[in-house]
Length: 498
Ligand code: ADP
Ligand code: MG
Image 1 (tube, rainbow, N blue to C red):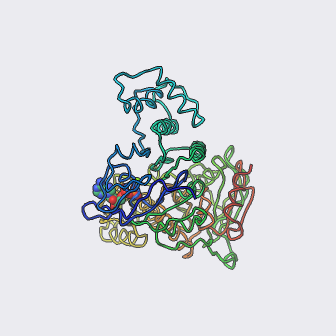
Image 2: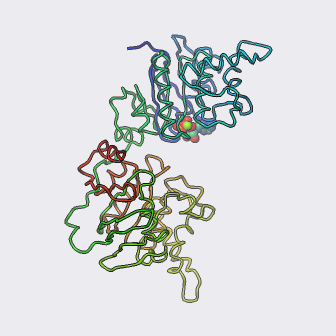
Image 3: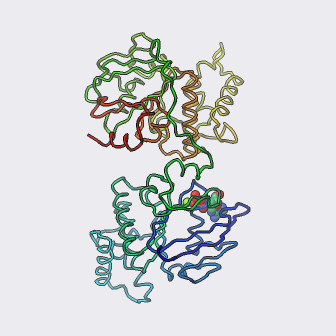
């Protein structure tokens, strides 16, 4: 085993009574990729700031290369070879790439003047050392997030970094950029440089980590070889709750009788073609496919936003036309859009008004006034039923977390007593814990008789909440799976084919 570089021992830190960190200990070895995961507020950033010398711990010590510190000052941290890459990268937007990379080095050498030519050479070498080519004269302010990150890493290396700590480094990166960042991290590892990678994106952690630790409520819950973890274990450690990973048990006996929804060669020119399937009461069907496969277009057609132009739709055996959202509502179809912030909610309005917006008619008295008591009862019912976390339903919808906003969108549709819900990316941008609660809600609603279509490319989600999964490619359904009979990896491969 490689030798220890950093040792954190029994660190505690409180802010005005809040235990941000409670007796945390761990080690980072030379050349190790050490991942720190935890939900928002679990103490990750506080830990980093203590290592950075920004916060003084209440208790404990930190040992770097054998030297013990009761508290670190930023200068100690840097001298010991620890560099922290914050989310804003602390770069100077009006300076060039070369200046940003070389400036700290020249400053730390107490130079009076900035040597432009030398800066160019230094910066080029630093970038080359991580196999990156970049125009050294570009202004950093004009560059992509991914490039800024590489500049920050190069700069860190110039300060003789032995450990680079990255706080949520992939938040604003595309899939390709994440891959190239991972390549850089692996190259650093080959050079004996350690990385501490802080994230709440589990798939990334599963891919990159040598060692993984999980924080929850300021405590280190587990710290083990990365091989010991899989997605569901990690979720368990993060949330403290066992999250069932079985697929939704629909029970084929429910398939007798008339389907709730029947599509026959439904087509929409240029969008999707010859889509046929049946959805039964209590069934949860996943529709997956890559971007542009037609899954969102299908959802929009079924809700009447972009109506289909060929084929037929039957609801409980009767042919219907869905030419606009009013038609969809009339037939009991609810739609939870992908982008709830712009399509699903009135953010400035109260949580309560968002919930009842689609049933205002039902709340009107004979003389056209809204019945306040009925309205409040309706709101209270849904806040309770979907466990929407708020002090008051009079607060604006924008005061809620992503997961709770999504519950308000669901409540809005459920209040209208639909037969069927179409959920487009139901948990995009939602915290892990809240995500699994939403999943349980969706399964419960289906169990109570609703038919559900889930448009998603989140594979664990599909396998967890659906009984059946349809795969779309180029606007057509090209495959179908029983969720209980396919693994995450198999489905991922099917999705990527094409
Ligand atoms: P994470 O990075 O895992 O999201 P943080 O370390 O930022 O978590 O926060 C841990 C806890 O400490 C949270 O409850 C947070 O509200 C609290 N906290 C963090 N920094 C401060 C601060 N400067 N003042 C008061 N409370 C803080
Ligand atoms: Mg943080």
